[in-house]
Image (cartoon, rainbow, N blue to C red; front, side):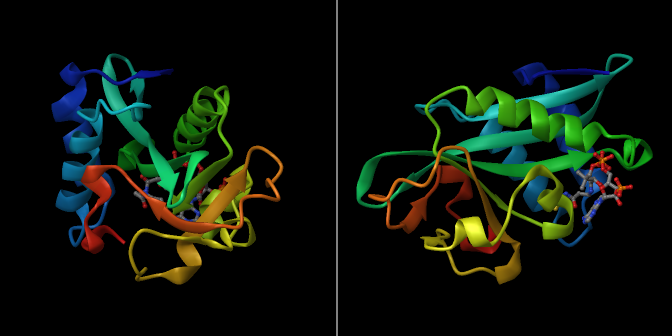
Length: 176
Ligand SMILES: CC(C)(COP(=O)(O)OP(=O)(O)OC[C@H]1O[C@@H](n2cnc3c(N)ncnc32)[C@H](O)[C@@H]1OP(=O)(O)O)[C@@H](O)C(=O)NCCC(=O)NCCS
């Protein structure tokens, strides 16, 4: 199994895997988001990784940059979406994608990672709701308990918190 940066050649496989991994109520939205984030070439750029097995893409994760209103020095990334083909779930692939993404984005001068997802899954990587306290998500959440953070640098006493801003593909209240 290889974890590598996604390329435009992976588009259809990334789309297919999210369509298969997520529930029918959200899979098209998630697949579209994954492709839009793949195209994001902002600064810093979104990191998109795929897990490849025998030449086929079986997992994908994106880490997109987020900002903090009123603090141009704040540097953070948002993890998501994350998906693994159903037949390959439970084999550690999701964890490898998350850990490799955390390693790659964490080598920069990054303060915090955020995620909006199941705490029962993301807690194992060190994400917690407590660490996200004071950082308001870009839109009202459907599931408040899913908003979590992982502090990579000691929380700067100057960072009181504030509202998180995100890249264009995530600027859709329906995603939150
Ligand atoms: C969530 C997902 C990415 C995990 O990928 P994976 O490769 O199966 O995960 P891993 O093999 O690294 O870890 C498996 C563990 O995560 C647990 N797990 C999987 N999905 C979970 C969830 N939604 N909530 C809590 N735990 C979950 C499994 O029970 C297993 O637990 P164990 O280690 O105690 O046995 C994958 O199951 C998936 O694509 N699910 C559908 C899409 C989705 O819900 N994505 C967002 C997650 S919030």
